[in-house]
Image 1 (cartoon, rainbow, N blue to C red):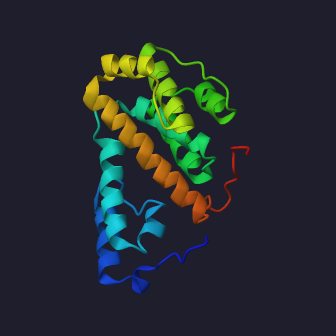
Image 2: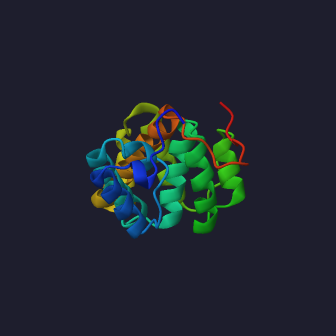
Length: 182
């Protein structure tokens, strides 16, 4: 890890408050990127609030959220993000074949129009930063405007997570090996 991993004893009161708030929330722990964000407690506080919302409280069902997160993790080859969300994707109902295909940069065998739409939309956004008009219109028709805003927020937040994990070299738990190839 390139940045000091602060123990509770080393944290300022502001840092400790942010860490404690994360532990008391839906995650029940300090998420990996917050280990870096704690060095800027206000960024950490705001980012972890956004993360809790896009992870748990959007109109997107968990399987579609996890699908989008995996597209982001694969795009940026974020090993920790992949490690955490491949498991969450399985729990949410994504098949191992879908997860493996995304890992291999192949088109996943998705069941249903909503999953295909979220995959196509997420892939377009992470590759170009945009959504073509026809794809955007399909997304609004399927998810509603609020759903599309939430999906873009989720993609953006998990891009921030991927960048944080990658730049600060927040590695996998001991004994885990990277799945994603460059």
